[in-house]
Image 1 (cartoon, rainbow, N blue to C red):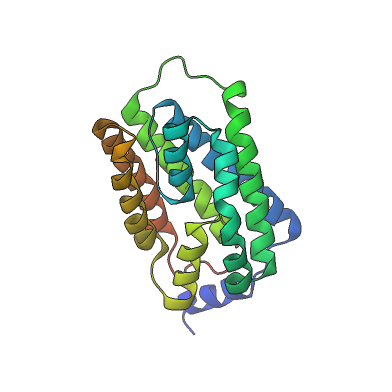
Image 2: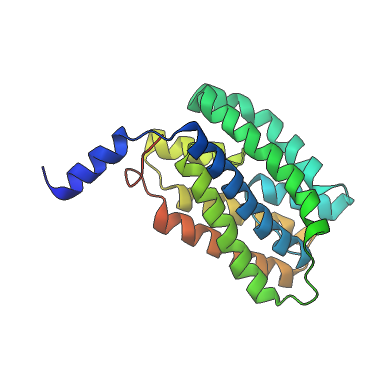
Length: 209
């Protein structure tokens, strides 16, 4: 057995402790919430259920956190049926924390000056890194993340590529609510998110549970 085969075998046999899962849920969700805070102040959006919540928020003025929580409710059954009870419970926890943090963070941090290109790239990388942390601990932020992870585990489809295609459709549909310039910046942010996922989240590379 080669060194690479031994490393993959060791990874497949490794299990995260409850404490490791907990710190990953907190860290990953906080990363995503910080990225969303940058996007929100810059008037941008992204894909997935986060992007859908952004669109409804911009169109109606309803609170983003509450929208994000409600939009994810129908996807928990898929998470349970396809990915198991532990995955569903961790996803519910991450979504709940994300919903709360998205409303709390604006009271904790303020950006007096924010370069929009920086917001797109830095926010995208923060969201991508946060999602990667959650994925590696068999959790997600619900919604389309559940579908993306299911397709990767069952079909071998790369999570980043599938996410990119779905996100692009959401961003294009947002042109009715967001200016083309903001959609363009959002595409840059989406590219940063999916670059982090495509490079770092591949089937078989990291399979600890």
